[in-house]
Image (spheres, rainbow over the protein chains, first blue to last red):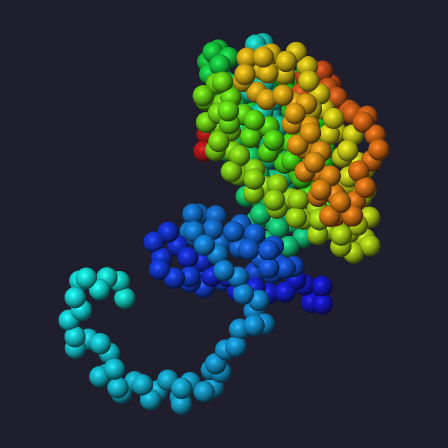
Length: 94
Length: 250
């Protein structure tokens, strides 16, 4: 494992996408080769127009064991959903 | 054989044979990311082959197709340079061969985008985008491995020493090249060599590799006079299905 290249998380923005989406991960020696590898591994079928890579070690993640306190309190708060409003067409994609 | 037809065979046979060689890594590369990248390069080259040999078959006008030219010719009819026949060797040799060919290929295709033959210019315009990526990738890998560990540096220097005598043939002008230049179909190989030397020199300097001080060049591939013994072996692999089951289709 010592000789493995660092792990990178890959985000691709598609042809009509508004934002970059996480598509997977890969190994690469540095950020430039990570982008090249992402191009070869994740855009072979014309999936993207933009690539972001992030060294996986820079991603801080929430802990699955804290699921209860983190997420359950919002389950009973339906009034936070904007479904009670009509959104004018002029606003566009949200 | 007309010079134009022969020139198109040279373009198509280079990409066909190198595409086949690179495809031999599929499933065997050191890491999966490189495996997929090499397979992508091989597919690009095979796609370019379809265009070059397709046009060659039309120009020949004898009813042959790109597939006929690829699968039903024997070694002496091939017009690829000797470098692309060289066995893959280790990963370093494959990448060195790739970079040296890519650097030539890029300059050739850039020149062909202004060809007096519109069909040639169209194919070149499509292919040059693919090859810009190929040479960026192979060049960066040559730098990474050349300026890497002691072992990777030594392997890359060995690879450069091994491949360098095959560089000269790509730029050696003969009657076909002279006619292509005078009719405005293809660029001047001497001019390409200047751009090639600048590009390759810069990459090798970054890679801390030393270009051999020799202009000796193995020749005989693009003229079809004398291929290496490796071409026949490639063809037995590549053509056996069409030879054993003539006309078999997908």
